Length: 106
Image (tube, one colour):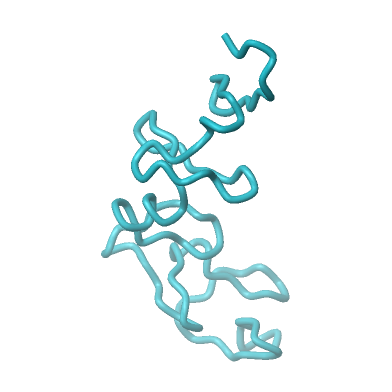
């Protein structure tokens, strides 16, 4: 029961507003952002410290053997694409205004 308190709905559950916090470190969620990991609601710091690294495009977990490191970020190979045409980049790319661009579009 919430007994008249403000209610937050997240991950199919209800929380008192003051109880809506990371289930590991108990910090309130910044602006209501959280990650559901193994049935627990975690803040970004707890999520990253236990399960990272994460793809900078899609936000899903990366396995060490399936990541591209480019532009000071980490990506799934399928997520590292030309900012102009969307073609998956194979490691050869140019940078334009901070974006990765394939040679054809450059």
